[in-house]
Length: 266
Image (cartoon, rainbow, N blue to C red):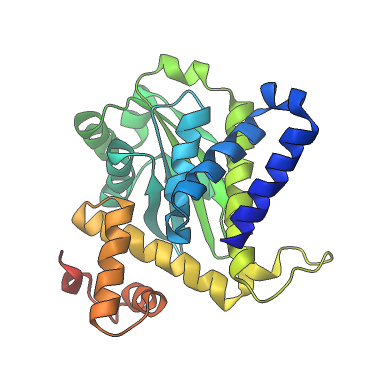
């Protein structure tokens, strides 16, 4: 992950050049440090969504975080900060409803306390309250790629926690997550962005598509078998290796339906 190394070097140069700034760094810088540190510990690019979710919990007063994507109207979880957040993300897929869907479709941030959750998504609310410690959710839309828009879900244990989360800070984190996906995608693309393009060229490159498909396939496995992201990725890799194919090809086959999820039974 050369892009990650370059970003770290840039941050360290700023620390040495401006030591006084670090003590008063804003939320965007705090978030960068948190997710880049996570990337140093685990440089696997397929686990980027997990690293980003954990960084959210590190810098925001929230109990959990998850990232999902809607790809051609198909919703899958990409990564979560821990097991409880992973469960909350899977429940939105299982019930076919939840705040992330509203955030993606409206393009607006959704704040949902217990009353709104039960009133708007009763099946999801019932499962969320019985299976997780969460009682409120903030969902922010994410433009992950041109064809895959998702949401950042911030999970809270109770209604009062909603007032303790700064929406300005959450929006800054939202922007950092989009930038992180763009940096990761740019590092896998052979095409360079042109300044006059309305959006980066990597969004349309085969490598960006393949990376997105791996994340989507991981989400399908997470939902089907109740695994955490790292175990879902390990299962995909083991099956790809055992069948003589690549991870990217396996992901493509799972999404297209050429490969049945049942054949990956752990």
